[in-house]
Length: 158
Image 1 (cartoon, helix red, strand yellow):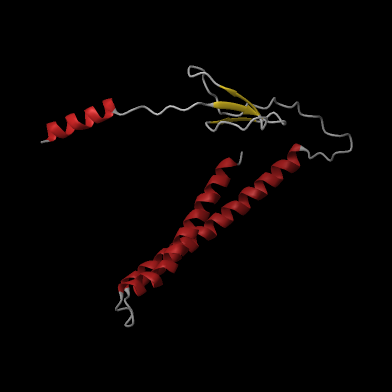
Image 2 (cartoon, one colour):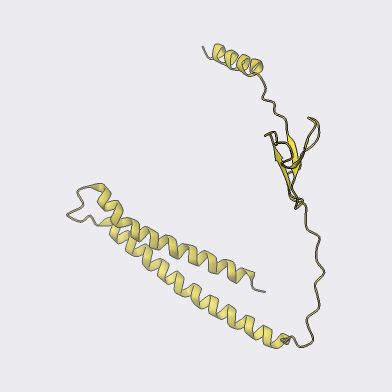
């Protein structure tokens, strides 16, 4: 039975007609290139039929890198000591936020565990229980994302 099914699938794949379509390369007035299989209307756009063996690159060309302009003469500059102090202050603030958020996450997880263990009298319908618990799960997820974001931000610091 399996052998007949495999043979039928193989024959179907081999005998199935392949899809073919003409591909047109169209360039608008702004120089934007569009590839389409719809035949363009006469005079609509500058389109040419591509050959079957021509490679198609749909990726946008890379923009040339612009040279960075020097700062203007009156532009305020920060010395390295000031910048180090700012970076240190930022790290302290982020670590404090991380500590606070970690405590909030632990509290939210504890509260979720307590709520999951409790079944209220009016929750004979299981969906009511799930609806009540969902708010606590959302809180845990929010705090987890905040902790993750703060850890990423701290990791980016020098």
